[in-house]
Image (cartoon, rainbow, N blue to C red; front, side, top):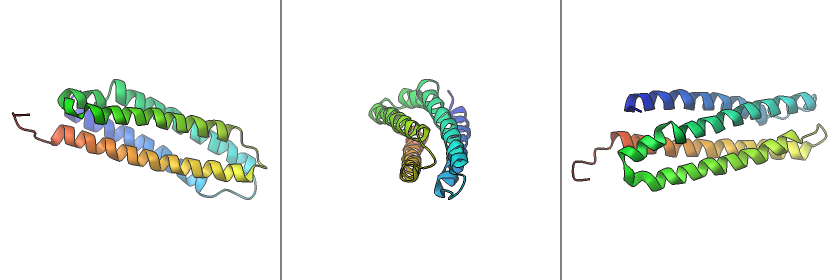
Length: 150
């Protein structure tokens, strides 16, 4: 994948994930006092959409995307790429746990609802940090001139 293609693809994919994250963040920011069953269904649906997209996004990053290209261009960055790929697996495990917890919610589960909201907010923070690390890695790999001796 060429540098411009990588940059364009990353920008589009990260915008999609960010849009879905923003909608989810708004959903969990305030738990309604009434119609909790409807709210739970909405959060379940939005979280599942977000989760499915992020899992696909991470798989594309690893198999068809820029992570392989980073290693090709800068083999010395392999340990950092491996660490980011491991984080993908960790994020998937966190998302699976939240998915199961959200799926089991009932309108009378006020504490569990709040717990799920907190877990989703934490997950979104983890993903933001992960994305920042990926962006920094790609920026370094594609813009840093290491010279001919490296």
